[in-house]
Amino acid sequence: MERARRPRRWTVPERAGRVSVLPGDWTLQQMLRTPQLWFLILSYFLYWGISCFLVLSHQVKYAEDAGFGGQFAVSIFALYGVSMLAGQMSGMISDRIGREAASIVASVLAVGGLVALISVRDTSYPWLLYAFAVSFGYGAGLYTAIIFAATADVFHGRHYGTASGMMLTGMGLGGAVGPWLGGYLFDLSGSYDHALILCMACLILSAVFFWIAAPRQAEKIRAGRLEAAQDSRFPS
Image 1 (cartoon, rainbow, N blue to C red):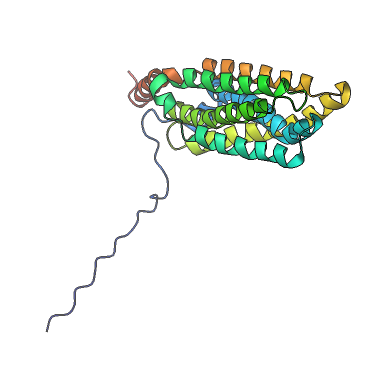
Image 2 (cartoon, rainbow, N blue to C red; image 1 turned 90 degrees about the vertical axis):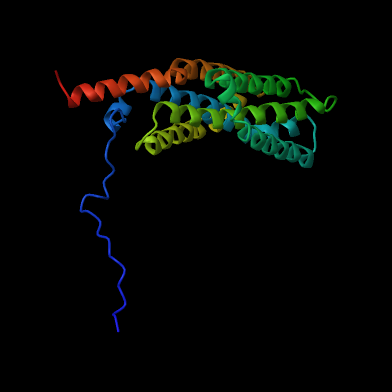
């Protein structure tokens, strides 16, 4: 009677745990020396870190100061969240019109939402708060989807996770400053007008820095890096 054949045991090479660098792939040092990464980080810092977190931390108080009840003010916050989710699910827009154009759309929507918010002075026009929540929330969600897609366009490869982590770090640093800055400007002036105008400026600058980062040129950058890698491997 034949012995049962044992399944072959596959051995893993000693260095298999290391991820090889493909030709043209980014190394960590090269990525950190690339201005495009820092422009994207700065863009996310301004859009979400300063502008969005400032507004999110003060929008309920703003509505209450205008005379609206707390429950209604919180419902506006909930509508903002739903709109942001819709924006995040619309990231494919940037595949059709381009990352830069989509970032401008997201910034324009957010600025439009803040214009509606700053126009609220009393309870006469509650629809302005709804317009703010939908426009600002959708723009914020759309921008998040776009900027990570743009980061993947330029910094694809083994260090994409590092690039994404740096993006989130920039957002977090802005998130630590934005809410405090909004409260500080309110204490100085007695209103949120200056803080909201600052947020609008940050949104506009964010779109400018995104455009300078130029994810539209990702193919050109990739081709240049592949050529440089081949030259380093096979010098003439």
